[in-house]
Length: 346
Image 1 (cartoon, rainbow, N blue to C red):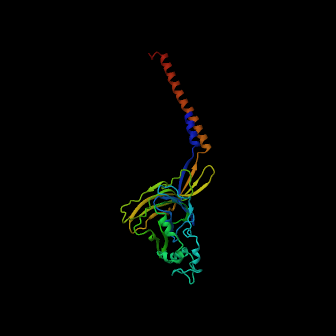
Image 2: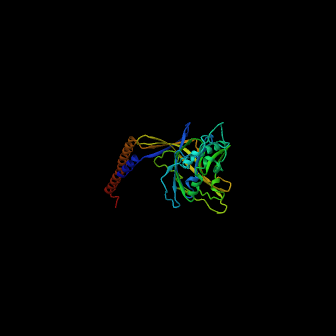
Image 3: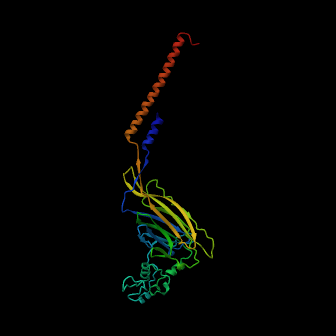
């Protein structure tokens, strides 16, 4: 009886979860992506992060909430993590005063009389035109920009990129790729000319963390701790490698039993693919697609009335079984006494 009571008490105190499925009816929502990736053989100045989705919204060089930390060849941090600044490659000296008050955009003007007084403004004008700025050394405004110098200085280093970004809740992708990006017609292009024709762009990586929202008890992110190494075949003519992760994002709502808090978040499943070739854009790509099915996870526990009913059933059952056993022993004892009295039992 004591064992049955203790087992029922354990079940009463235990918290279990119930999974319910339904159609996701949310509209106008966003995905909050938390990401933390280390590239042991890609310098920070070589990397950019872009996002795009099927709705046509494109974010070039997304760095507003993404931080970079330079790493040595052994993985030791070389400096504190810092938020990327598109103006961080501009030297602070007096030669910038030589730039005219209204600098030329070198044919990339979108309106008459447009001025481009900095190298970044020239780059932005070229991006809007869908052109690549491959001859930056001949641009007056870019003489004080040491982007090419930082590429050379950081050669051989690694980089850790982490932070969070928000994207529309529609199918899309975000990717880490080399060089500055721009839009050329309907094509998304990265300028990898500054790295040279034979540069080995090694996108071996470790995904420390990737999630699409807040965490809840027992949540598992399948890519946390994932590692991938890029094969290296030829030093004279290295092929580019593209790592692809295809993510199925499942909207999830978790309701806690203790404080009744509702945690809106997302789970995901993943499949991987690796492509290699000299005509590919090297990089790390995450393709995500929200599921139309929403999962509601609720913590639950047996009610006290159910516990009381079970205890009563245990007590009643024990007494019933004890009564049956007692009646069986009593009937057997009486039968034996009757046979002894009539002498039929020797």
